Image (tube, rainbow, N blue to C red; front, side, top):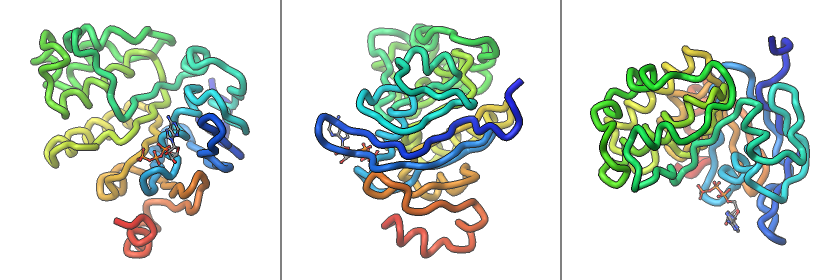
Length: 237
Ligand SMILES: Nc1ncnc2c1ncn2[C@@H]1O[C@H](COP(=O)(O)OP(=O)(O)OP(=O)(O)O)[C@@H](O)[C@H]1O
């Protein structure tokens, strides 16, 4: 049983570098169990780099990151994944030469409690219809659904989604939003990077605005509703 009041993810004073270039300058945020938290901000602000640091893909990172209270400093990505976190990258990473089901079965199951293939197909019926289609034949929306679906088998409880709506038609964006809602009902915790402010404001509980590698602002859904114009101006949307 996780201890009470232990965040699902805690990030304090996170700095990160690409070579000599500093991309993160001291990021602080928390994600509580069951929450959907969105990282917002302009291009190049450091949102993707933050997600990559959390899953250990950013080699040069400093500061405190803890998953369910367990610090991840110095850990390799595969060991961080075993703490129950999974990452769905912006570029989706679908293998073109594999069909839908082969792509689904690719990530290893790391912990008990992951969704079965049948449960995943109930969540994304399109993928079931296309189960034998190669990655190359999928639409952008199907690829995004597959990229999310693929991490649901692993047993991870914290899902990191990088721009899940990017380049997708409104009707598909709606389906992704519904799927995220169902995942939350099933107890998943979500940390998401989104440029689509409208989408983010519909699915997020709390929001952090990242600017130049720092958290510039933090607000919840209620504040977002009451202060919409100012926040839109802040994000330049
Ligand atoms: N592989 C890389 N090598 C060097 N610099 C990088 C690399 N990836 C990102 N950066 C730089 O790090 C900074 C943060 O980029 P990051 O991708 O985290 O921003 P972002 O907020 O996710 O924006 P975007 O939506 O454009 O991806 C930017 O200045 C970017 O140019």
